[in-house]
Image 1 (tube, rainbow, N blue to C red):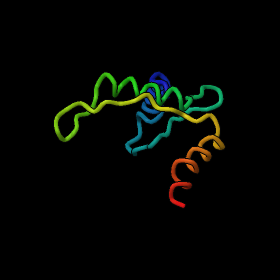
Image 2 (spheres, one colour; image 1 turned 120 degrees about the vertical axis):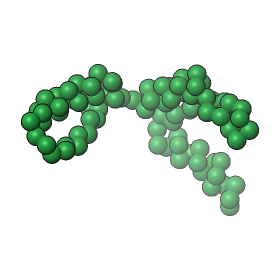
Image 3 (cartoon, rainbow, N blue to C red; image 1 turned 180 degrees about the vertical axis):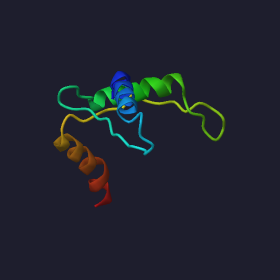
Amino acid sequence: IPADMVVNAMVVSMVAHSRQSASFIYHVGTSKQNPVRTSIIADCAYRYFSRSPLKGKDGKAISVRKPFLYTSMDDFKKYMNFYYNMPLQ
């Protein structure tokens, strides 16, 4: 979700409930009007963990690979069948 969308929702909720003592929970999401694609999320995660890698038990940085995203559920099922189901049979 774009940061400006979240910040705007937070400001609006604070103004709307500024005189109330009760707590409110809001959920900010994306829509067809302003979609967040999975590829964007995967790319952002890859860039973040490439620049700021986690450390393993040995103290060394854990390297990450760019994720591969399937374009269809059929492609994903074929992959799963070939690499996981067939070897088990």
